[in-house]
Length: 345
Length: 266
Image (tube, rainbow over all chains, first blue to last red; front, side, top):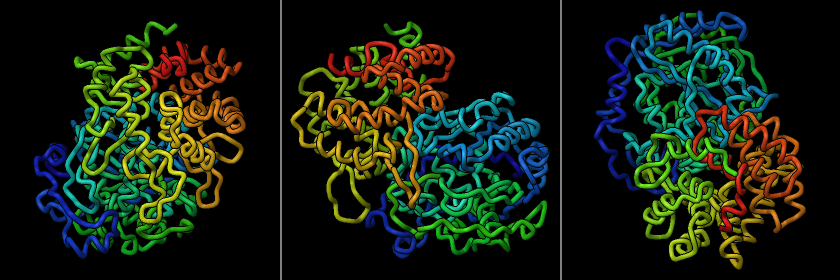
């Protein structure tokens, strides 16, 4: 990032431009929505995506120098977080000791440490688990609590944190506005830190889908069913457009394939994917998973207004992404634009 | 007896108008205010709730097209009278939606938000609210049917999905504890199976204060001998957890004090 991106992010989130009323049939797929409204977003709030920078960095295990790798990644994309209040948003939707559901706590803690070294004014980690109401259980059982204490980093439970209704600047759903925690809206920089996983309704869950966990369960419930029923792809677009992460760091050291996002199996990839455009990071990650990003409905659509989804337009630093391509088994039952009864990040 | 620090800590989330926020500094909301009212018997909290009841009798939070519904738990904190009756009318009228676009068939249960699916915890609160203050409601049987249908293999409940894409999903101690307040006395076999879950898992899941508090409260209500051990751990952890939110603190106060059953009956 060049000048002060942090202020512009806050300005965007607090902006007065209210999403206008949008009348349409409820919970329709993206195609129907696009037929009715070719550009369902406020142009002023989403300037045309420019250059995106993504770094793919080898990380063979969680025991290597993760701080150094994250530093390399952030520097190679030109990230400037000096003086910024940073919030890291990992994926802690659920915890199962026998599975790899979560962004590994070691990656989260290493990122917190790396950002401090890059001059961040403060770093906090925040999450609102979608299945477990007791966030404290997830944080402690997963080891995230201990990892954060080791690096002196605060955790914010987004399911209970102070929040306010924020108008949406995109209209893929009929949600109109969303409750967002102040921890998110007041942050200068939000970094979405997903686990690389397949997802039975969204194909993949990466940095955009991970934004679901920013919304408070005390309003949307456990799970956040109202958002899924608003259309999974459409909700991903509106929520990611509201959270607007500045950066994304994907934990692909070990991903999850198959019956994701909860019951899949471990899939080692051996990489961290870092970028200043979450759409570009997700497109690159999908490519590494052996999935054509143009075939992922919400990701292709996000490339129209939220970031760069075209692999040809992404400036890649670090290692060659093709060296990490590791085809993931898709999630069974994946149905594009389905109407799920539940769902996780 | 409620530990002294809990009321003091709850008071930090109380606003000048009597309502309670989810955490200190947050604006008041219905659910934490209701839980604080139940835990502390705070008349200011009750007054805030009465003055913030919607025209349709509900209590919730609105953002755009999504409206959360906490009416059932709030109704349990209200004294007998018109406000509680309006709340119960609303509770009786709300049903979960079976599918986004298919035919609607019972059982329905209660959703977290208007128009959504019925889930474990709101359904438990719906059943409990009606069995305490409107015991003749046919919705009690509907809610119980939902809880029976969502029981995890082996007993207990998670958020409400016992099987996902062919894979058995594990129960959670926290949601199971809340559900047990609904089933206790209405379905002994279901309750017994459910009770075994937190009895076996409460220590493993005690890393979260909310889980420990709700499990302890359930042990108290069910006369489970584990109450002594769980309460001792809760007393220790509630002192140690300085970031606990209002709902978790209120559950802690209930678990270590008069219990939810007595609170809703008073």
